[in-house]
Amino acid sequence: MNYLFVIGAGALLLASSGCKKQETPPAPPVSTELFGEWQWVSSVGGYSGKAVYTPANTGTELTYRFNRDSTFVECLNNNCKAPVKFTVRLEKSFFDHQPHVILTIPRRIYLAPPDTGFHVIRFRYTLREISNSLILTEEVADGFEEVFRRK
Image (cartoon, rainbow, N blue to C red; front, side, top):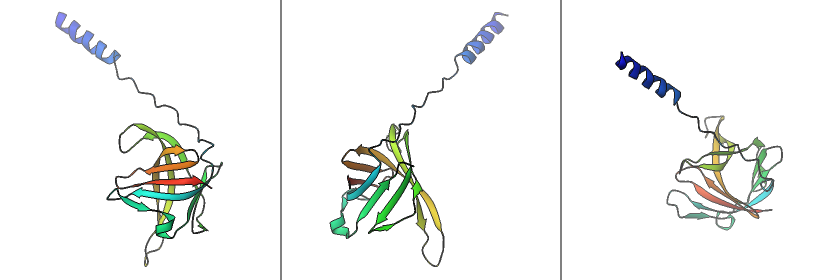
């Protein structure tokens, strides 16, 4: 009888001490500092971690435009792509599994001929700085840290 009482009390104690769901902090509002046009300055990283690309050594001009309606426009050598919706959320980083402000931009990756069509890939960046400079770190192992200046 005591044995059943101890088992019952133990089961009741175990059931009442269940796991508490950890609350996720609310997503940060999109900083108004992000809105506007940004001129590409450099990209550093890649497979070796030491690759350095700039407009001078690539011959390309890249601008990003973040609009208040959460649309993003990328222009390469004054050839602008169709606007896409971007998000800014507090999410776990792939690297340290800690919450960071993550910018997600869906991009169309077109298939090489003779195939037609495209895939949509969501590019994730850690927002490292937003001031007169915008610093984005790609959330991939061999990614780049991209630096932009306000245009």
